[in-house]
Length: 163
Image 1 (cartoon, rainbow, N blue to C red):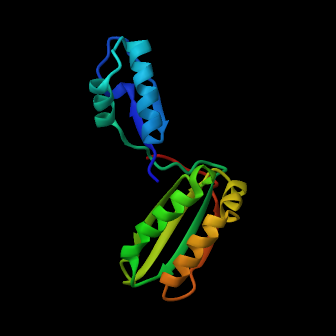
Image 2 (cartoon, rainbow, N blue to C red):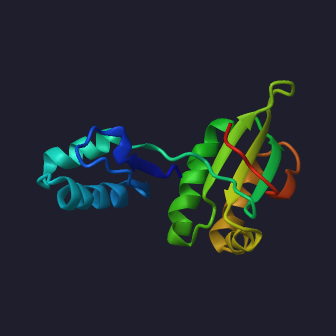
């Protein structure tokens, strides 16, 4: 689910370019190579594409004012299955996915309890995501994995700041 980022400021350049590209890995590599050819005078080819891929990093998580977070707390003794369930959901929902990112965390004080925080651009986009058949299937699978009923919190982001 991780978006990728490439930033011209990370590569020494005579042009002093400040362009940053974020998106799916394949999209970023293609766009960055087009930009490198057009702006920086590079030649497109396997060497350039390998260099761009090597400079990719995970994009930072965003939760700006007006965005929406869903917090899901659940217990399970099958957490090792979680990534496979999410991977299946991502393939099934495809480009209809409106969730931008998620974080899964283990509760230090309560072994076997986990919290998933999912970021969306807005409440409306979260509801559209929730209504998708692929989301109904993942919710069913997660309930089967859970040791009890998951608890949901729906949160409107009021403000955010990067320290």
